[in-house]
Image (cartoon, rainbow, N blue to C red; front, top):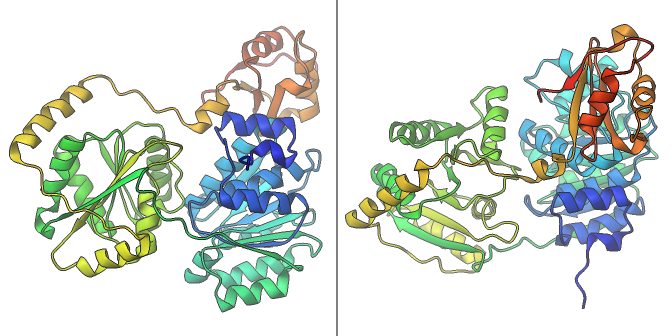
Amino acid sequence: MNEISFKDFDLSNEMLKALEKLMYIQPSAVQSRVIPLALKDKDIIVKAETGSGKTAAFAIPVCEKIMLEEKKPQVLVLTPTRELAVQIKEDFTNIGRFKRLRCEAVFGKQPISKQIADLKQRVHIIVGTPGRLFDHIERGTIDLEKIRYLVIDEADEMLNMGFIDQVEDIVKLVPKNRITMLFSATISDEIERLCQKYMNAPEEIEVEPSRPSTEKIKQIYYEVEDSKKVKLLKDIIYTERPDRMIIFCSTKERVDNVSKYLISKDFSCRALHGGMEQKDRLDTINRFKEGEFPFLVATDIAARGLDIEGITHIINYDIPMEKQSYVHRIGRTGRAGSKGNAITFVTPYEYRFLNDIEEFVQYKIPRKDEPAHEEVLEGKALYNEKNNNKPVLKKNREANINKEITKIYINAGKKKKVRAGDIVGAITGIEGINGDDIGIIDIQDGFSYIDILKNKGNIVINGLRKSTIKGKKVKVQKAEK
């Protein structure tokens, strides 16, 4: 039997081009089952774990079905955390890149004034946490009239975090003739009630939790006293010499202590946990994605939903007490055809947790002895030699899809009564440029950003410098970001 590919879904050329650039080769199990139904506008309940590829499962068909010229939002995605909202926004932006779709994320602990300004643009997709979404709806800064697709992601987490009442309040306000998709790792009675009340004859899909592949991910454990974990961590870094590593701890205090220790030993490292300011958390995630530092020390909640390539090692500094967390953690490595390593620290009093994990993953995790002093010394020399060269920033999927796109800046916006049509008219008047070369247009009060596709940025910049917009000369340059 031939393997299914994304071409089998009868997607547009723009969508297939984006998926190819993003290195989406073969649909995951959840994508293979969800995408065909979503393209037929079916309500769907999906029981699937985090990390199963479910974001693309709903983003691909939704992006395919959106009407580009509609001025009001057509898609509303509810998600439990700010980090996940940002991740989903990035996925929608990348998948919808060549269809010129615009997605905005709204969440708490970010100035609402900036979000209001962003929402005044033509926005096709809105992703947000329930509290901030409801705030915008009450203010009238989000119009639900044209919402065609409602996605409730990680419904079980929203229930656990006490958001389910807010979710229901929002669902009541969305047009009844919508398509609804709900994703959850577990389907409780409360979530079942929500589905029965607000969904229309939904199709039910259950994707069995995947077990970590012992071929792709090498799993080992060390028995170690709690007080000796930091030394063992340092020794393992020298002997394993990871490219990029995530170190999972049970509490934010542990995260801070471990990251401070690594920094004191001259390892380039940052912490990630829920006690940090929102802007610092997002900055840390972005810098780690870009390869600016190789070691991230994190809690489970802060790292939930992160999709970061090139992770060669996962360290369970504190063994997870929930066996499903073990699968989520080590699933960060061994991705996209690469091999990975998962190392767990077990104190003499924690073997019951290890036994539960082994039973769940159906694999006897081998124990390894702590590295010998000579091995650590040799490893340290090799590690220092490896890191003497200037680190090369990792390429990621987003960089791959953006390499043909130039974002340009012009010093004209709403205050000069510039509209998208004015900008399109000026750009398409340049020889060798047509409408297909123009991506997302972002018009602010005093300036505008325009994405130029197909490596034609310099042609447009030079052309606009010789022409006018609404009869006036404008300053044109490559945008700084």
